[in-house]
Amino acid sequence: MASLGLEFQPDGDVVRGPGTTAVAVREHADSTGGHVDLGYVLRLGEGEGPVVWDCTAGLGRTEEERLQNAVRMWRTTTASTVVELLDGRGMHGDHFPAGSPGGVAGWHAIQGPACVFGFRSTPLGDWVAEHQLLPAVAESVLPRLTGRDVNGVKFFFGGRSGDDVAEVRVNGEPVDEASAALRELPWPRGERLAWVRCFVLLAAEPPVQAGSPAGGGTGTAVPVAVASTALPWRPGSRGAAGAGLLRRLLRHR
Image (cartoon, rainbow, N blue to C red; front, side, top):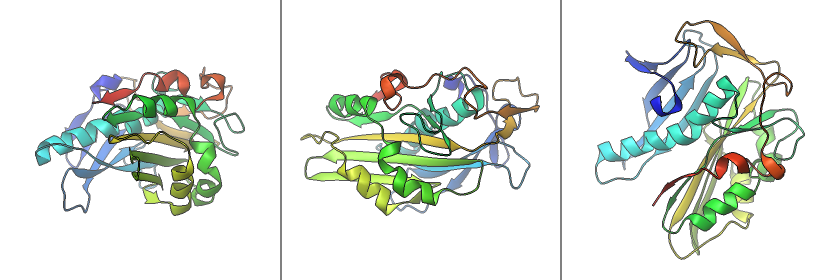
């Protein structure tokens, strides 16, 4: 989290961050290890406060290495998107107001960086930087959104020609119809294994409230605005799905 400009410290069952933010950790039922569920808490201490949950997995030779890589993957994609929701400066994600190219009706979308990894992953990374994922699956995703202030949509896809995988999860739950729509998109399938993971937050109006991520841990509640006039948001250029940000992809080779 320090790489995102934030200071977090272990505190009992959570890792407490600035203001009322925290990260909660819970085990994931996975016999292979290296799989963990992480929840970005926006208003710690409120039972009904928003929590953005996401499961993450990593590769490695040992369980510790797999867990470290899983947390880094989550930090790069999911945590960056939540930080952008709280910060709103366009440094950690691209914004798509409702009805804009790359967005969906009724929600303000924030897409964080994509994590592209594997062998010869450049074509896959370039494709992601130039295409819009959310509108392509919106028909299946929108009915699955809850009345909560913030909904999370995770995309994971890749593999190789003849052996690919595509998965879309909404608030941690797989959506088969959206996954099928993602699989039908013409993203590159090469001869070597390569994957991409990215995360999108859909924020409702009126804005949620959360502790300031960069306010020195004062605990003061600040608005997380979703109206396009509230903060100097930077929409993705040329209507692409975050092309300005996703050009700066984290690549694991």
